[in-house]
Length: 130
Image (tube, rainbow, N blue to C red; front, side, top):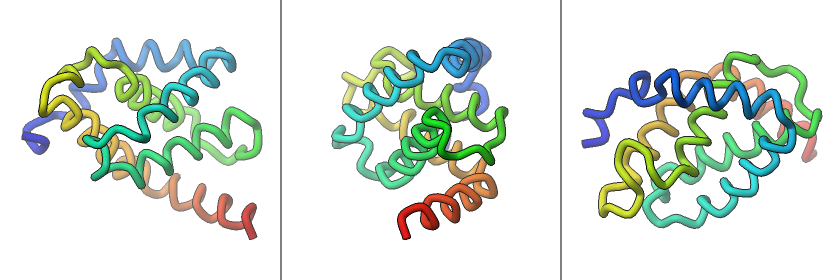
């Protein structure tokens, strides 16, 4: 089932429009990060947890102003993915036994789509910790 989900269709204009509104509003972005923190404990997202944590830290560092080398296009895309993940009513409602498959697929798709950007971010992040 996860392979049958078309991520670019899933991340439709509706989700990207929401993402643009969130990106323009720092308070909304901070709230999204709080909501995302709660999602990190969902069993169904275990397969994508490492990637979800990476996206969480990426957005957190952009929102806080720590990471400035980001692509605005990728920020909107990843924000759309994260809004989708925290939403209980998406393509496959999270209450269903398979309800987190679409979320995991979308997370994996986003990480693949922005692999170069995330590599730059990881170098930045690792430099901050050291």
